[in-house]
Length: 510
Ligand code: UN1
Image (cartoon, protein in one colour):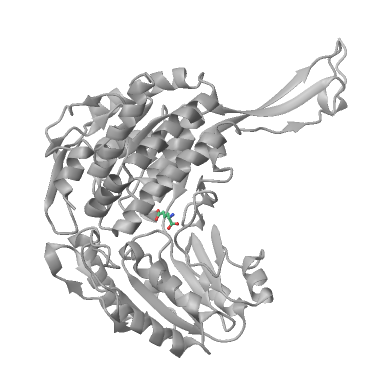
């Protein structure tokens, strides 16, 4: 694979502009640049100009203006634009997937999978654009009609994280666009080039369809210059942010201070329960993929394995065997199972976390050490046995550390352990016992936004609503009726009679 050729096909250069209004690339008014290094081999991929506060101002003005035009375009026509983008993504799936892999470090399979998620959501949105339905209700008054409709919000700000550098943006951007909004995307500063590549492809579709500047905007900049101005800006009607709980709390508080809307998809601390009735053959690959896929950097990654004591030894040994056979190395080489962490800081975070885990009584039975292959940020995924809950187990480390913890008694015991963390994104139970699976899915079962049976915690499909409870932020993105967060609801009551009855039977004679 020739990465330079891929960069060229995606329209990327050694030095790139970092601000786009969809159809135009703008120079930054400042002098700062981001350098994007690959975690695969430590090599510099390219420079990207960093936006200033003034640049942000230029972009929001354009976005607001264009949102007034776009809201009048019929939703199915907005859907047709997104369908075209999906077609372009299909053509560039291999190149874009490889760039995701090279800039972020996830395996090539997963990089292409991320582009596939984008293609899928484009298809979903094409259909959805004809189904932005409201309800009709029966009025209590004669010759009255009551119904609700959904209108665009205006401008949607999208803040995304490095771990899914483009798919999470696509879930937000496609839905926001068919719902009639303009969008401004602030991607992670750690993965600016994949964002630029998405916009190079998008601009082809926008130009072909003669879409005015400012409908889809991208702005690469710091928290201070872009993040905070966007979050605090009353002109931004919805802020959709993906990232850490720490970041989410700042966004939520600042947006709430101006009574704005936010949609948050934050951290997870996801558990997979292996019950006494589990099919162990299914549970093992689900655990391994969940814990080491994307090198433990998915918000849906499996962090805790709660294993019934009858299976503990078997599962532990099977995991040890599987972990020993993992091939760790360049994610561009399809025979490798695990790529690098995002950067050296993440490697250090993992070392610090393991130190603390040891101090708190955890037993590291495998891995954890940094590997110095090819100048990248590689680590050996770690397995840790816990006999009791330790404070570290309650933290989301965002590195490949899997805690194994035995439980005894009924599935209720495991559910209690699972729910005993601040986060509530994803959860899984492996069991072939109907009473257990129904208990897990009942009102008193898993408290997470995602609860799976005989499927791991990661790898959700786009068709379902994605997000979680508690410190995960409560927002829902992607499928189902998540689109409602990107629109405003209006209740309409119409009188087609010749009298004016008041609701609740109130008489008001003049
Ligand atoms: C994330 O890590 O922020 O379910 C999103 C999954 C992916 C999305 C993860 N489809 O693992």
